[in-house]
Length: 71
Image 1 (spheres, rainbow, N blue to C red):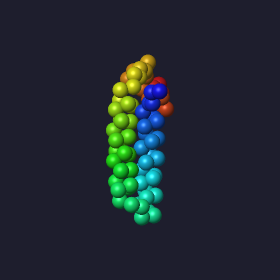
Image 2 (cartoon, rainbow, N blue to C red; image 1 turned 135 degrees about the vertical axis):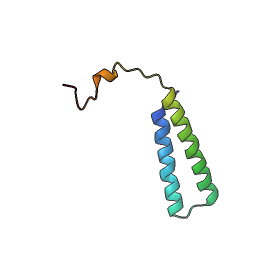
Image 3 (cartoon, one colour; image 1 turned 180 degrees about the vertical axis):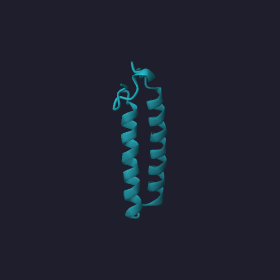
Image 4 (tube, one colour; image 1 turned 60 degrees about the horizontal axis):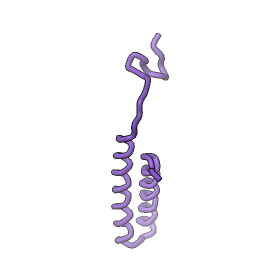
């Protein structure tokens, strides 16, 4: 099963929340340190996956902005 960049962003966000909870409640340092390292690794994987996804668009600079169409 291949996970996309969005999955890895969700995992790194969940690890950040877990790290915050550990720090607030005075969790053990090794567990907090491992959570921090895991979160950083997940973030790097997410950035790599998002940048490597095949994405194409039919929009060009002539289309201008979608929220402010050209006259």
